[in-house]
Amino acid sequence: MKHKDGRLSMNTQREWTMPEISEELKQTYIETAKVLKGSERRQFMVRIVKSLGYGGQSYAAREFHWGRNTIAKGIRELESGEPIADNFFHSTGIGGMDLTPTEPLTFSSRSPTPLQIGEGKGKS
Image (cartoon, rainbow, N blue to C red; front, top):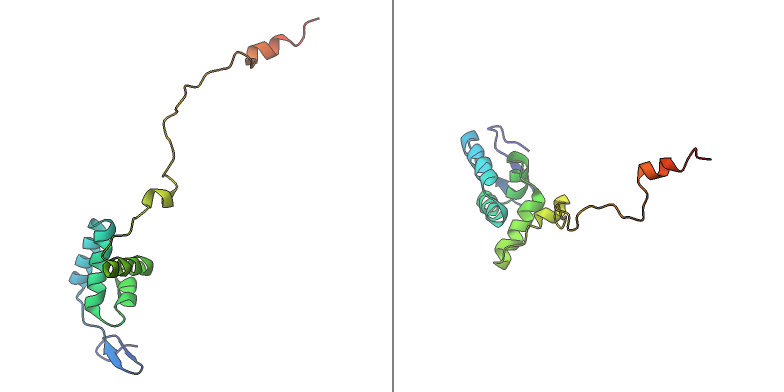
């Protein structure tokens, strides 16, 4: 719900309102998150979410276009004190692929070449 003055609010058992964040500050948060990588990025996101208070995770996901699962992973990292491995290469299908051949490509002497196959036809 929105207040008349534009602030977000929700009436449940307690009243809460999201702090006002300028467009400039939103852009700063978004750009900073794009520059950071891995655990540092997630922990930055969590600090922002926690500073927003109740509903901050949903707000950040909506306004900053941050993934809720990424924020949740950052929360787990912050609570445990240990960074979680990104596993980026395996998730994209690149990890484990050997891009250089280990053996040179050769034709076996047992397999006939296209010329040898054609020579057998048409002879009487």
